[in-house]
Image (cartoon, rainbow, N blue to C red; front, side, top):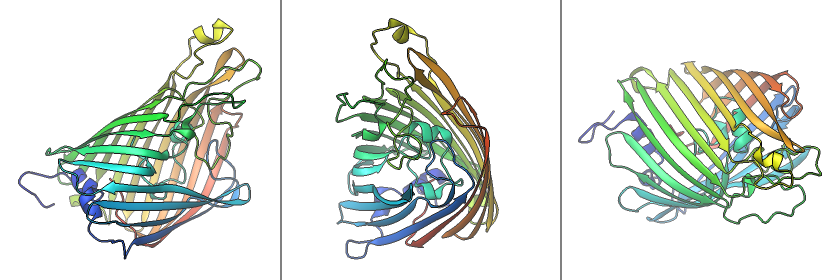
Length: 395
């Protein structure tokens, strides 16, 4: 790795691929980078809070265009095509501008974009080593949280990679349940803060760790004595392609860690990635209720975590293991019921090139009163193919 004055870590170099200076290198307004990602699958049954349904289907298919606007700004737009209940749906996942020339390591992004909380969330789902995001992501972030807002990011001038930032979003997809449409939600609902650190471990390894906080002004649910039970999320659960969070709270805390190993830092032929994240969601119970028993009841916080290991043992083959759990609370009248989902997953993928992947995945899911699901085994056969420009993936 090239050294400038002092040592620059592999993490810093990887993240530099997505720095504001790197964005300015190739595409121009008259020659934009255009790409499409095709995602198709067959699945033998359904998973809770997941977008893929039983049978053949179209997954997270993307059409993206990006370019420098001038020497000061960069812009990107990503449209997503998905199938939902037999209907083809078109959504806009990204439509943002980002500064290129702010001094002192600062940058600003505005528009619609993926939040930078946690490790996986700021990455497009087609880059994942598994067919779906972990259960904690599906429960608390709607699989991957993107929204309309603004971000201020800062990269410190340190030997190790150190970034921090704050964000503000509308937060419509993170609102708590409102069964009768009577609640007065705040228009500016989500605020986040995050920091990420990274560095090298010898010549073969690198790491990154992060802490994130999300404040959801509309995350606390309202009590409704007339409903038999109320779930803590958006009105339409199941396979909601609006990517709404199923379980919300006013405060979400996320800790993440990733370690990557490759012989001499060369990821092309062989590499190992170990990653994990922990979520804690608090303050979701109603503030007031005619029956004080509900508001005074001691209710456990909602939590979730996963640990993942993916090993590419040849240029064309990789295998992954992932285990995750999510613990949520469901409201029944004047009390809450705890519910748990456990998922054990094995993935085997064949990559003919950086542009094509065919994946076979097995998932064993076990639910304890979780949204009424039964223990089940899920088999998914998936392809992910990229046409056109394909930039480097994030660290």
